[in-house]
Structures are given as C-alpha cells and as structure tokens.
Image (tube, rainbow, N blue to C red):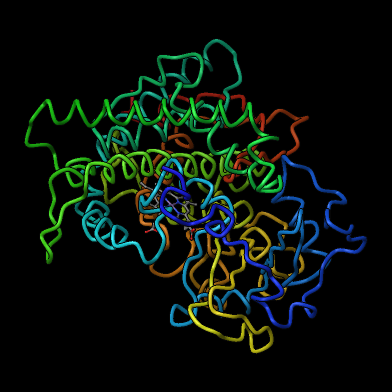
Length: 491
Ligand code: MNH
C-alpha cells in the first residue's frame, strides 16, 4: 500500500508544493545565509539531527523561518503568538506531512497518519476514545503496576550486581510491555531478553527510515536508499506479521475480552452509524497504537530520569511528595497517582525541554493570514518546532533552557498565554493517549523515586538522538536502594 496506489503522488502526498505558491509573501520569511543554488540550505546540516539543526537555525532567524533542501522548502514556526494562531481550528488543521506522511506505507489510515478527510479517522476516533476514559484507565492501572514491578525486579538485580542501568533501553521495555498488555493482552517478554525485542528493532528501523526519506530528494530516494528501502520492507513485513499474529490469537481465543483496545477495534460498532473497523484498518490501528503508545512515553520517562539525576534537590522534593502521598501503602491505587502533583511537574518540565514528539504540522483550511502578517493559500502548511516554542523567551524568560519544575505550579501555568506548551499537539488531532501516558509515567516515576536514589555518571552530557521522536542517547544511571523502612511494606 503506497501513496501511488491510492492515486496521490508521493511528493504531493508529502505536501511538497512550491512554497512560493503557498506563501505569497514568502520573501518576508527569513532563511539562512549562504543558500546554495539547487541544493539549498545545506551548510551545517547533518542527516542524523535535522531537529537540532533546525533549532540552531531557528534561534538565529526568529519565530518563523524557512529552510530549503533539494528544492523542497519548509516553513517552520516556533513563536508562541504564531503557534497560538495556528491552534485556531476554524482556520487550520493537522497537516499530514514530512515524517508523518513517510509513515503512511506502514500506518496507512490509522489514527495518527490518517488524512483529515478520511472517514476512517472519525470512525476510529469515536470507537477508540472510550478506551481512554477515566474508567478504562482505572482498569489499566493494575496492569501498569505489574509491568512496573518487572522493571524494579530487573533494576534490583542490576543494582545488586553493581551495574549501571540502561535507562532508554529499559524505559522502552517498560512502555512497550505496558501498551501491549493494557491495549492488546499481549506479552513481548521484553524483560526476559538481553537485547531489544525484534519488534522494537523493526520499529526503530522504520522510524529512522521515515526520517531519512526527508533528507534526500524524493525522486532519488529509491536509488540512494535502495538497501535501506529493502531493509525497511523487511521491517514492515515483520511488524505486520507481529500484528496479524496478535489479532489471530485474540480471534481464536474467541473470548469475550476484557474490553481492551483490541476488543474495541475488533467488536465495537460506532454508537451512531453502527459501522465497525475493517480488518485492514484494524491492522493499521494495532500497529499505530503499539508504536505511538510506547516510543514517546519511553523518551519522556528517560528525560525525566535524566533531569532528576542531575537535580538532586528536585529529586528530594519529588521523593518527599511520594512518601507523603503514598505513605504506608505498598501498592499505590489509581487515585493516588494524579495526587503526585510535583512529580507531574517534573514530567511537564521534561516534556517542555524535550517534547518527545518534537513537532507537528498545521495547514490552512482556506486562504488566510498567519499572525496578521503572513498570507497562506489554502493547503499551505508549516511545522511547529515544539522544543523551540517551549523555549520562546517572550513566554518562558531568558533562562528558558534551565530545568525548573516550578514553571508548572498552578499559578505560573495560569499566568502564561494559552498554547505556549504543546507536547501533545493541538485540536481535534491532538494526542488521544495523553492521560494514558501521564498516568503511566507519573506512576513509574513515583515507584522509582520511592525505591532508588539515582546517581548520574559524572561525565555524562545530554546527547539527544532523533528518529522522528527524541531520546537521550547513552543515558546510564547508578542506583542505590533506599534504606529499608523508607519504602515500608513494599517488600
Ligand atoms: Mn500521542 C497524536 C505526542 C503518548 C497515541 N501524540 C499525538 C500528537 C502528539 C503526540 C504531539 C499529535 C501529532 C500531530 O499533530 O501530528 N503522544 C505524544 C507524547 C506522548 C504520547 C509526547 C508521551 C509522552 N500517544 C501516546 C500514547 C498513545 C498515543 C501512550 C496511545 C496509547 N498519539 C496517539 C495517537 C495519536 C497521537 C493514536 C493520533 C491522534 C489522532 O490524530 O486522532
């Protein structure tokens, strides 16, 4: 299933019309000096870090700027005022472009990659949204706890053996097992493996490939990326086989399931139209949720653990809250998670500095003027750079690069303009899994803070790897078990 099979050219589907046509006043949008004819703005471009390159360029050029490579010109926005304007759903909508569009061959019209006009978006949204209600979340809570316990068992062993833990690797195991178990009743056995599950390897390969497709001229992609394309096809085939097996097993079990996401995908009819998801669409949704449901949460937990290890005073405050709120309860109940207000601020502040889905695109629904200054034709689009939006000095101050969870205390949040913090995207197409991710991540941070002291490697400097999502690279932490008794009945 490629774009061409559905009658849209890949270039068009990726949203590359000429920026000059789409933005009639394009000349007013700054671009980097030393633009090279035909090639574009290649100075300082590294294929592995397109996001961090754009952040560097954007800091110099201001709240709206453009970059060009191989004839494709992209307009970027990071100013808080312009972003607030782009959040106007009457004039703008999600644009499926760049990295998101590159995932269409694998995720098709699944919830994340669906075009706004595809009827399967509304159908799947309405059928699956109740899977994220408060009631549904309370049902996932015991399963999230069970998976977290596999993590702490593993970390206890590493700690006892005097080994540092692989934070991104273990957070990925945790979040993959959590979404697989809560959403699909499936167990990948990640914690019983030394190496990542092949599902993760295939997924990372596919995300990387989708990113690298942005870095070469579209017509040359088949030639330049021939080996990568073949590898990617093998990865996609593996991902599809995994999903088909999972669906087959559930159908064979023929059980009246627990009402998890997979049950909803297979059995639930639309409340008004009575429609049901088609089998090919179920495959897309399962894959979408397995990927979207763990990769970004894993990164968010990893960044939070990094910042906690670098800021012992913040960790101490968060730990004191956990001890106070959870007190003597060995196993925190569902309602006790949202009460960790300070832990939640730590998470928000980590997502501010490194929103793990670092951008989202918006397109004009009709001819309009962005920010009262930049005319856009219907269909013109721009990419919001969330990590720079989250550091806009006009909102976040001159010290915006500094980690400070108190930026998220209630009064500070109220005092800020709307739409200055957008780690979940915006509008109708914003993240459906937000409460799921927040519950899981807050719970796990609470459990880890209560059990361990975190010691960074003194030489570690944060390096961020990019594969559409962002993740701290090579982050290892040393653990110390807290004195028995501080953790009460947990033993
Ligand atoms: Mn999630 C959409 C960020 C966790 C499932 N998610 C989005 C978007 C952002 C995002 C940003 C909007 C993208 C766009 O506009 O193109 N999501 C996150 C982050 C985390 C996260 C930062 C964790 C931290 N997401 C999750 C989890 C799930 C999930 C957990 C599922 C269990 N997200 C989705 C789906 C969509 C989405 C599905 C697409 C929703 C739609 O378009 O209707």
